[in-house]
Length: 74
Image (cartoon, rainbow, N blue to C red; front, side, top):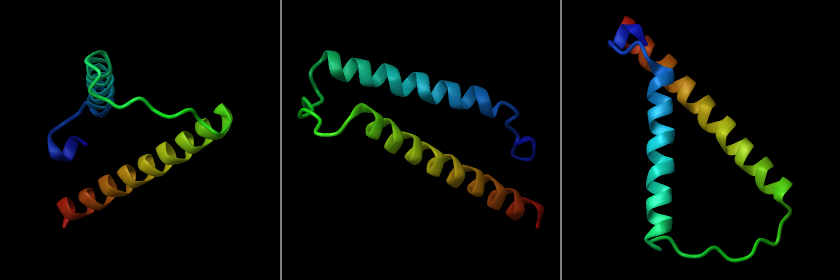
């Protein structure tokens, strides 16, 4: 990420997660979010689905960084 002028990608990810967590807490406190229905699945299947989505998102983010780096070099 040094080529684009930002040398702190882990800090940026940290700020993103903290901001998302704080907004979710605020929305939940103000009852802006609807109450979720009771789950019909086990907690482990939900964790597996979350892990799969996060792995896919990380893969797409890395592909995007690689593609953007390729564009900057040419």
